[in-house]
Image (cartoon, rainbow, N blue to C red; front, side, top):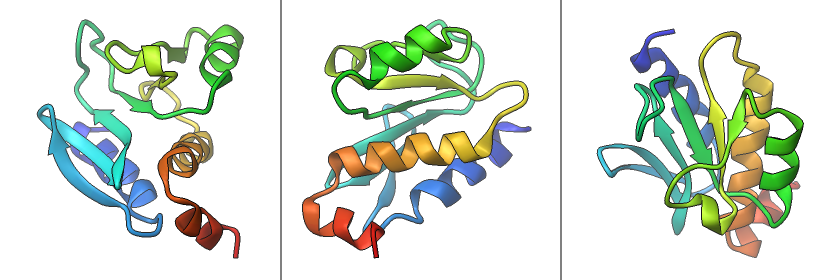
Length: 120
């Protein structure tokens, strides 16, 4: 998958959430709902050559997911200390899992009234 195709796929997922927006953040696509919830690095970043994303995560999720599958998940620089999760997007990508990670990130950051909108 090309970087453009990958960006379009993640964009479609993230902009499907209520009131989410996209803007360039640190030179790459970032997705926001008031605050940032997903950061996409379609051509790699910070010593990682593979395409990947960083996603906000609830307390404890990062350690559990990275511990279960350290080949696909990692602690990202800068935001890893706040519990964010890194996910590789090379090889055979499970897009349902990407959508789940992005939705969990959105739910973690979005205000309650927007989270309620997802449950209707």
